[in-house]
Length: 207
Image (cartoon, rainbow, N blue to C red; front, side, top):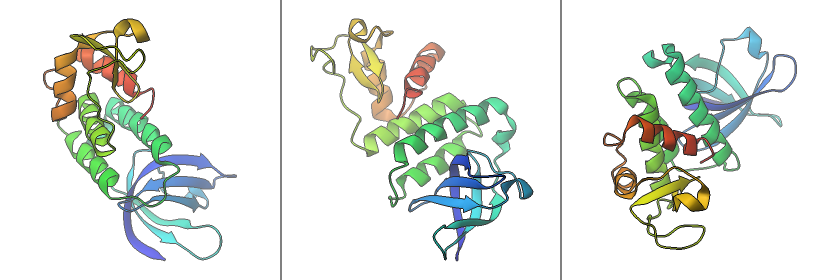
């Protein structure tokens, strides 16, 4: 049995009756664990940071001794909902990966701390910009990914925050220099609330 583990719950699926399959992101892997009689223990939800034990032996690794490591901001339904939205996207992005470096866990630790004092969508978007850079997907906004033509002062963004002409993707144009600064600095303070909402809609298309 592996003890003293911590991780973020990214996915929950009902297996049978009250049993659950739970996807937990730790600092070294995406653990997919079976939890017996989920309804009879403390409630776990997507987005929870938990302390737990992973019981090996047999074909199915089991989730045991779960303790919720709560955040003050989880009392805010809006913050919790947006956090859960992002973690569902992150699970779909990482679900086929088993072992991984600690970047993703550290990123969620960082965001969870910032959510105490920062606008939730802005904190998540800034961290997402860091994820794109880490994965080598923070591309420049010089050319449209569809027609390959040079981009002007206004760009539209597609999934993964790649650039295009607004007319090529039928999207809202945003000042190119402002988006370039956001992606480079991982900072949204100069973006308007409308621009943040536009980036959020693009993020929800997938990581």
